[in-house]
Length: 263
Image (cartoon, rainbow, N blue to C red):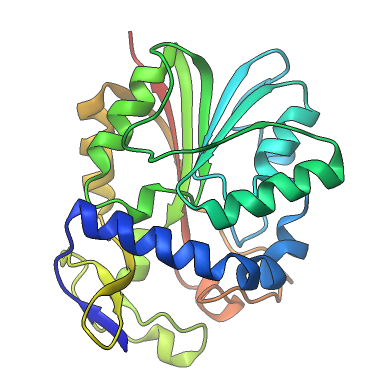
């Protein structure tokens, strides 16, 4: 068992990530739940929040879709701001926590188990779509996700999503000094895979360059309005996985794509 680098198709990606997030949901929320909050919109480990950035614009009275919601703290925050929110995720385990926290907080976005490549909504159903490290990195081909988000957005609708910055893929997944050493090519799109003893994928994450993302977005009909590469906050000492002050002061850890639906 352990990491590997090999090609993984769409079906294997879906199966692996359902299994991973269902199994890891309890531990993930135990580790990160206090930072994520019950009803808070944290864009990235650098600590940027929607309440400060306003990347989605005014959401009161708007129909908003969260793609890859996890335990849905972002969706609940959006509801608290007056939005009508549908939140989708592939993992029943994560949605179980989302439903529990809906009950605890009394803030109840609509929760739906769905694949981001096949969104269960009619065309032009939403004014805004968003994703904070959800769904996008875990699909074998990002274009069907962007096509689906484009389809369900109304003309002029915003699509804002955050992913691990692609430059991070050339370094080891390590917050310390070892994480400063280049070990692979930026242009190697081979996904990161964890496998079990039989070689079956148990976790899959896909690498795309910035150009890959931009071409997929514009190919789906989106206009890229901004690309935010958060700088590490001065005096911020918290580590989160591979994110750390050491690395954050030298190169970006997050990319936030801010887009609008053309037409």
